[in-house]
Image 1: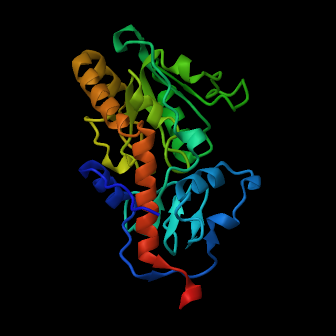
Image 2: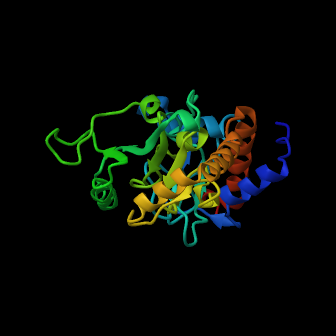
Length: 280
């Protein structure tokens, strides 16, 4: 098979971020091969992982962790997500669970034509999301709630489609078990993303996002929501500048051919650094 096409400088930097392994490393424990996996397992992760490994790496052995990975694997593994902080080199990022996370709808509304308010919809299982709903409930300019709660619950709000949320100037992104599912489409939109400094990252490389540049940074305890809202309502040019930077950041992920090449390079970097226990 011919060599992979070379990456440009920006792609090379992303490759270094996705796969930080320094081999040689002998894998321990059970390993997988792509050719032994089946789409009948019913997981979107399987299809996405096979797409990343095809056609060069079908016989190579690897470790994978599916789901919301908010820890560092004990051995080098392919993951959808990982913690940003600490030594996270064993977590090698690939674009997994694409159907749920990689969604970039067209936004037909200009920033100035949108509703001058904040919006959020999501499940509030985690303590920090419950805290967010408590903090936001006293802010009249914030339409935030959990549509999965009983309708008589004070934090219940009816479900809103992505299109309906795009009608708002400010869309809040709150991490869940790992990354926030809505972050990517918010940053692709004409709305301003409100978000605390992220703790987890995916193929989107949330660790490279800068508050005040790519998003409007709010406090980790959400205590300054009103102040941040008031500031950007009074400084719309700054809001628009952040929106433009967010859109520019997002565009690099929209070229499917380039993204496909980069996933192949990440897989190649992984297999160049590790070897299965069977050959030692």
